[in-house]
Length: 82
Image 1 (spheres, helix red, strand yellow):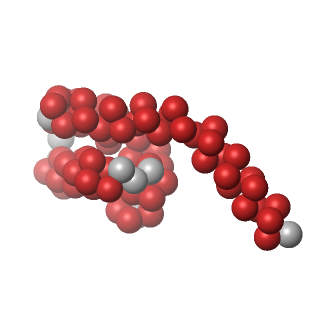
Image 2: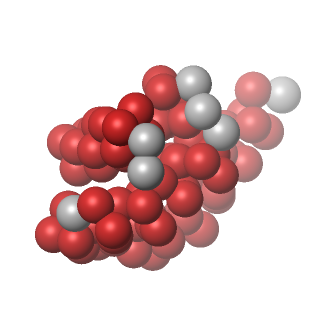
């Protein structure tokens, strides 16, 4: 694996752990697609650093548990602006 990719994966992992940010936010910050961030944090990180992958996986599971709430809040804000 390319050294640049390894560094990007580790940077993304540390960022999501420190800020509990979403995949979409990380994609904007690192100027890559959401698919790339997801592949980095799910597949590549597992190969590079399993302990870090476990921490990121916990954050992903938390995001999945609250996504229906976030979606509802987003819809509410959308219609309040109208």
